[in-house]
Length: 173
Ligand SMILES: O=c1ccn([C@H]2C[C@H](O)[C@@H](COP(=O)(O)OP(=O)(O)OP(=O)(O)O)O2)c(=O)[nH]1
Ligand SMILES: [Mg+2]
Image 1: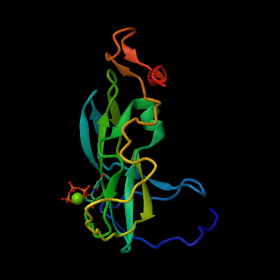
Image 2 (image 1 turned 120 degrees about the vertical axis):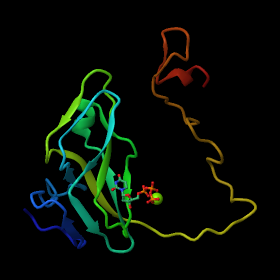
Image 3 (image 1 turned 135 degrees about the vertical axis):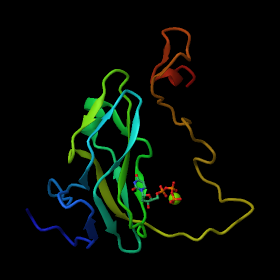
């Protein structure tokens, strides 16, 4: 394994003696995989809070984010309810992963120590809020929620073929 450039030291406690210490799979990876220490079966639509067997102490000014794994999302329809989950620097409890099976038909099965999510550690800024009566202007102003166009397909809203296509807003342009 090649040397990481300026790695940040993070204290980690194993709450399960057999759980592997999380490690980057490849040089350049942003996240380390987290495993579940409990086997679980999620029926379609079911959610669960899975324990990872680790707790950490991040330096002040950092946070860790629990992100989904794309393979589980693509193959099984597995999502994280609160993606990305936020692990605060002061949190000393067990990191948990809140999963939901979004597949309409198939159950998702986890064995003990299956990799369930990935943890990305990042620096985070602290801000001070200054209340004002008016905010400075900007090009976007209050445009949002699709103002730029390119919406995903959504069922049942167009009447015609039963879904609103990604380019549905082209007509109005
Ligand atoms: O996916 C997650 C999200 C959060 N946490 C832990 C670490 C985090 O520091 C703590 C609180 O998370 P959050 O602030 O998102 O939850 P909350 O509902 O606002 O709880 P609290 O009132 O304790 O902040 O829970 C996890 O282990 N996994
Ligand atoms: Mg909170």
